[in-house]
Amino acid sequence: MLWQFSESCAIKCGVSTNSSSRDRPDLLLTPDDISKLLARVALHDRAAFDLVYEHTSAKLFGVALRLLRDRAEAEDALQEIYLKVWQRADHYAVSRASAISWLVAIARNHAIDRLRARNETEEIDDDVLSVPEQGPTPEANAIAGSERARVEDCLGQLENDRADAIRGAYLDGYSYQELADRFSIPLNTMRTWLRRSLTKLRECLEG
Image (cartoon, rainbow, N blue to C red; front, side, top):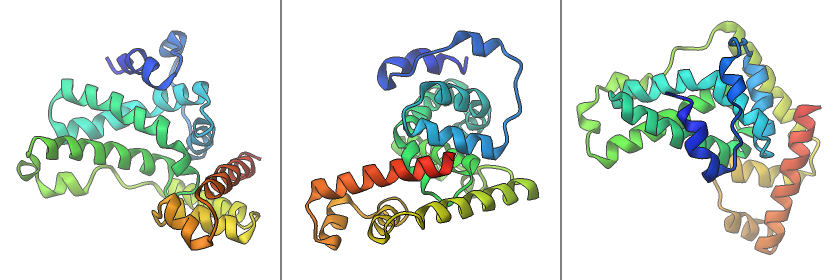
């Protein structure tokens, strides 16, 4: 049922399905593996997206089901969650979260948005809203810490104003226009800064 996503989302996000991958034995991916795949998804790598879906959809479906308490709705929500993953993967490249935590946050927030849309958040226990996943293992924390250090190292290789713009856009939540005003440059120039800086950042993270 979860693989219905690939069929229904293919048109919306241009992701090609690979039916043969559904029959492969599940291969264990480390958080570092998933982080690298997300960096490729940010560049609209469809094969990387398929792998992210294959190895994380069961967990994200569980998050959605726990909150929504309806299997059919959770399946619908999962499709929308991975559309957001496809569209927002570039945000992960400069985030300080582990890959799984970032994905779970998207799933959790989307499910809560669905509950709010039908005015049912008051019926959900606080512990369900606040504890969407099990805590990471010490090994996962070590890997996540290593990834954060790599991101900071790669940001340090950018020009100072470019690195500050990246942090402002993707860590502090400033709009492109606000950043353009802050750096006293045209809006289109700021967009170019961010696009080129993200490309360099991804190349550094994948190197």
